[in-house]
Length: 128
Length: 128
Image (cartoon, rainbow over all chains, first blue to last red; front, side, top):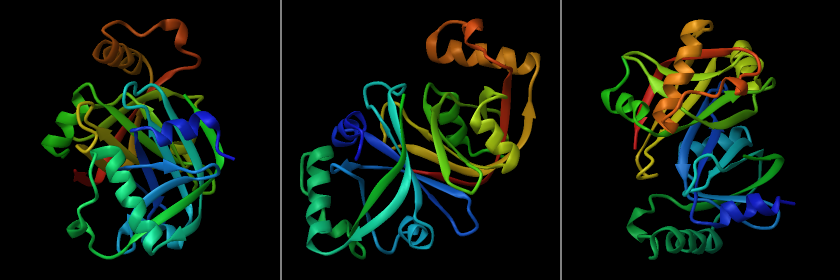
């Protein structure tokens, strides 16, 4: 299960540093929208992106959710991508995230390939 | 050389997501103070910390500096720790960082082992 405080940070209007591993193991980080269900952190990306190709090859990731109002308050979750969801659920979820962060639907013209939800199971959760 | 815009973000009062690699390759991320010289990003930590032990074993890191006023504006630097500086220079540098972020000297009682500056040379710099 996801820690309640981690979940609360991820469901709030906070950004996450999402780290995946490039071939060879060099870490790569993007600042991204984030969400959570009861057991996973959720990241929404597209299937042509480097970060997606990275987790296809190595599912180990770190998601660090930073409180927008206080950078000293953050949750670091080390874990693995355990499920990838494409199709209507992923398309609806990017609209949901866009509403949360920007108060409007996600611009359809911004979608290059196909949206995908990465479900990330925590191996270690740390709150600062 | 460090990109001028990356350098400017790192010299500002902005926080960095600092990612190192645990033994085995799982990424680990902390939100940290950051600084720069003309050629490197600078992170100040202590020699007993996991992140320092990590870079001793594998120098590959990612430093993602996020604009405090706009999370969509950030610099991702993938690189390597090329130098580690302990002693008076590292001790003075944590006071400098503390002044930048908190407007006061670093509390001496917070130091458990010994401060160390990690000099990080960029292999790839990306601005968002």
